Image 1: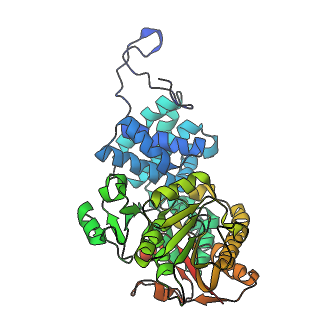
Image 2 (image 1 turned 120 degrees about the vertical axis):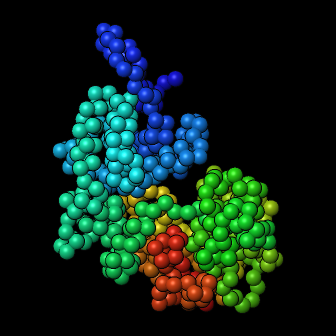
Image 3 (image 1 turned 90 degrees about the horizontal axis):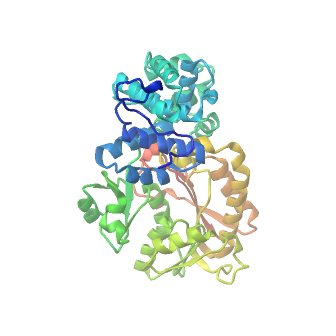
Length: 478
């Protein structure tokens, strides 16, 4: 079998030396570490997404149970901490990490992660990584051994103390290196948190933790307590539909497989339910999800609509994502349209002033879900914001055209960046040309939720609520 591009198979064995000289056989490569390497390399080499490539790699390697869990920890941990790991590796190697051959660089990242963030004994972390480097970058094994031994001379706190700028003079730079986030993201988080650097640090720490899997028990189809009992989990802290999965593959849960439940962050459940539960005068049978892919919020709204005699129109511009929405809402009173949500008024299936409740789950930077998508923090750039915020304003403007007078629009983003939240929603409302009132969103969330701010909008946080950093604004059309 041909090795993946950028790698070479390990040629160990008694006759591996030049001229037939006999060398001691080396042990075969550690399969969990090799799986982690293949996933990390695919992310950096091919712009792959870890959550898509890793399950395939684990399946191909035949890894289950503890081995799969270890490979997963190495993959996601390395990707989350790669900014700090690269700074340490550059110092230990005496050269910029960008000058290290990519296969060796990814292997070294995994080795450094083991040394600094796991309980793997240092000798095992070094020797296994050197074996890995020998297989993917022949000739770099000695270099890798020297670099990792230098990494092992300090723990993570000592490395941060050596390399990070002082907190007193450069707090953003310090937090960025200490907690492995790009500086522009640290700055955006700090601004959204009112400049509280202590709370910003707590958010960054939470971003680097492995998040639990949240399930949504679809109302009318399965009781959340029943679902929690069936998976050995616990009901969610806030959403009445949430269940925390203690482990295992969500796809193996029977209720997920047959459509009575789906995987969805508790924060996403809360903002969708807030729109459904907001008081509304007049008719309430026509609901709209303007950016529905891949279908999580449409699934919850569709189940709620079924209980209330309503019908949901779910719009998704990308054909393949529209198919996912159709799959996610099968059996529910949902009509899926593969069209652009901005076509309200131009598309006869999206008439103006027609809908009672409208959800705009707008495309965004995704900075609120970095704990679930660790590679995203390194791919997103400030230059992504202008085209995204323009699209967000256009979609919210379309929603305000689609909703009837007196109807409700919920604007939602999985980002706390103030440009994508407060700036977008106020600017879109101003440009809409219609009277718009902000509804206080705080009473629409479960009683007793802490840290919801002064209203009328709500920002959820991983470190406050255990959810993704979802933003919610609810507007009523005059």
